Image 1 (cartoon, rainbow, N blue to C red):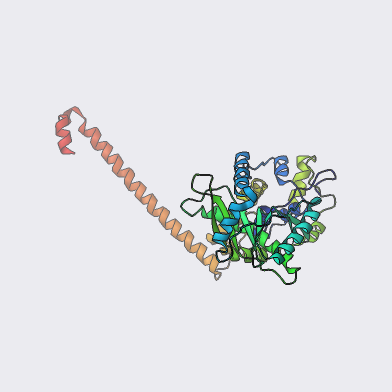
Image 2: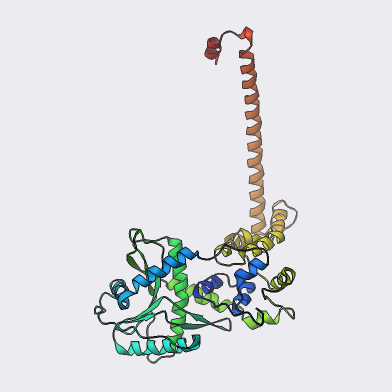
Length: 389
């Protein structure tokens, strides 16, 4: 589907978290499952997106991560001990196993072996950029967290290293939430590895979030409970339609190769149903294209999922307006009743505004007439006019 000579674009945890947040979007599911570069596809469709990190942010993030992991991860392990497991022995002489191997499958197997050995060793172990695998809608996805810490009791913790600052011990809630959703994907993948071991190690649901302290380059850390994000992500991933089912419903010859014409690519993309929401603008490269199509169709999803949920069977803006004006809809339907009540209140407010505007215009005209009259030569001096006013 992505083209015979086009390499697959790896699916990372950030993309998986975005996919789990919109499980009804078959378009994103098939494109991510096929390894299509959505940024190139969006440019070929004439709707390029500015979604993604800047090169400056990537460079700054890499430099900060290298600082945190310097000296065998001594500072990182110190923060993990202080924030996640203060009752354990200090992480002195922690192990940092070599995880290099050939290909993602080899690295995944090497990571699983290192995790098993670390759980049995009974000390602190730091796994730097381990490779995990997670089955998503019938497609195997390889994930690479920043780090995984193995505690002396054999439990595992995910470490997320971000470049946004932690000011006075707290960070931007939106960015922390995004990091928590991303870490939830890693936790699910770790749980699959743990389930194959005997005894089964505990995968902790409190992750270590490491960020720069205030406006410096010094690391600060906080323990983030991701049980809610993990439960939501697991439920949403389970709801995803399998890739085979989506591919089987597509027309023969559907292809998203970047060398195809814009007309062919548009036809291929439109053959896959999409579920657009405003949240897609910060999570998907095809968001601008899907938003334009959603506007053309008049879909209410472009106004947000909460509003879409409240409107029930009314799926287009035209249907909503017709129901509000009494042209269509069941009068006994609570949604229709609420819409008509809202339309009546809006009309009443507009009439009140129009009446106020008329009165204001009348007063303004009268004031202008008074000024004109008072400035007439027979009206007296300017001092007298001021007193009259």
